[in-house]
Length: 384
Image 1: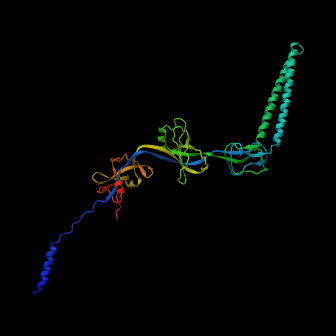
Image 2: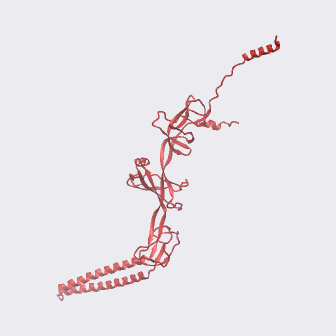
Image 3: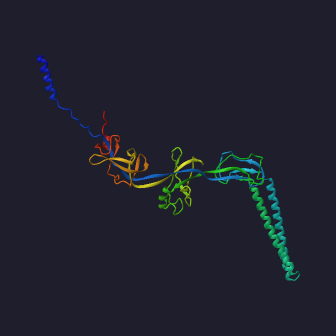
């Protein structure tokens, strides 16, 4: 007989093994997520349109009379005020022309005095029949000729004085000058109006931009074109190429009368004061037109998700089950996104829906979760 002790031990082990409880699977607790309700309020968003800055005025300074350039009274790139002297063209020949015209005018005025006196004496002589009627008519004709000669001499004097005034060229507006195109001593105005420099008006400054048809319709409905272009338009903002906002507000002061059929856009112009001359013609910028949205529904932008079917947010219902609600993304307001209803969906987001804002990676439509309000989650102590 084999070892009885071994048999007893073996039987005991079998008995002990048969009495052990089986392992049972315990499901993990529902994942925890943080939820919050949408916010509803009136917000102001901005519709942006790309544009280009253009000088409010750009004037070519030209020589209007012939002569040698005598002086240049500014530095290249200098900012000048209206009326500042810029160039002088030799004036001597034009001063002489003025004196000659003045002499001819004086001569014509003397001749008219003689013609008038002759006419008066001829009329008196005619009353006594000392002269004929032909003599009176001749004296009247001489008087009229003398009057015409005075008018001609006066016109010649005005023209001479005007040409003399053109020898001194003044700034027609406030602005900044480009470099000079000629040096002192050059002959200008020889058969053409010679370009001497260009004056650029920097303050104010214009911004031209195009509004597409989709964005244009709401403005038309709001009556932007009922009166003057800027009368019903809100103040505009300008975003520069580096993303910064210009400190001044602008005014819409021109809209094209018709849409460009090639581009489907309407060209418009905004004007900014540019008091500090911080804006330069040729810069790129975006015109921002404010639009007020009443009772807008806002959700944190981080809670907005995307899949093949569209844009959606995850919500937790009364049974703590995750659901997805598809939405249309509106404009961004800070860190919040304006929610627009998707008309193709049956379910729409409401002010009472609890949106998942934290734990999105653990939430899936159809699964249960443990939901905590965002305020409570923020107040809860951090887990060690």
